[in-house]
Image 1 (cartoon, rainbow, N blue to C red):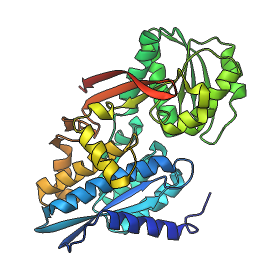
Image 2: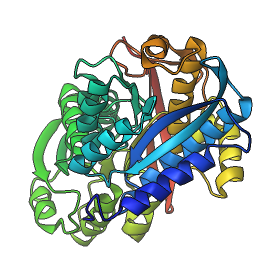
Image 3: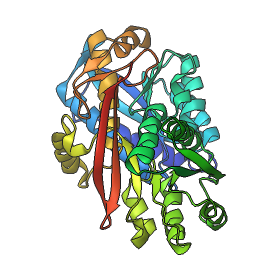
Length: 385
């Protein structure tokens, strides 16, 4: 892994890119800095780039509107840092973001980086809206933590029910990658499977660096499960699905949103068909303003948006809207507005937070790979209590 010093120049250039990308050519009276961190290098860089693009699109739109905040025209700048999906690095860059004098934070991406970084932002009194889905993130007792997506508690309940009820799986095997995200989601799926009447017949563990799963899959095969759930990244689920085919394991592989990617399809190859993956939210085509978002995103970045871009876009607008309503970029002024937010966004027409900073609207969509493409199976939408 690169040291924080060795990629200092990369971080500076990334921050400059964010600031320039979010800044139209006019002089502003008030610069408002929003911090952002995610994996921007390494095997998870495609997640970070997708998230960053969604943020940049929102900030560019906000700057074009010339919103008045703190009695002046606001110019939003994105201060971007690469946390490499590493918890220790995340804490270091979180402190750098704080030292840069940001007014809010849009990140991090991974649960394993978001949770330790959130303590730095909380100590500094800076509101944070993260992509992280681990329940622990918003259960720390902080009043400044908010989400961009449905939590693993909510998603895991839907997935577990789908496995038992829709796939008719009585015996389920579990694998997780020991990250905060992978373990947390798998724990929630396990609870939901048992609550729905299913039985957990095996639980195996790997890492987010592994690519050989033969041993744990052989052990799982001996348990004859009706379905296998994996909590982890596409860099692991892709090779895992190929190895399941090699071992002639007929049980379907079910996974979370980090598997629902083009990277998984490429890594799994011909073995991808029949894989299921859950995704917080609804398909882009059925989002409240999904078609407009997709059109604007493609015009700006010359590519299709990924899974996370629309949620990042809404996360940025949630913070900007709170500042606009408060007429201030000071945390003590806009934080109450963020907590009480109600807005019509790209991903939903009912964006609002509960007392913990979790989204009130719970939406989870299940996808299946058919003919080498992700195809929607069903969507479940409800409201949190």
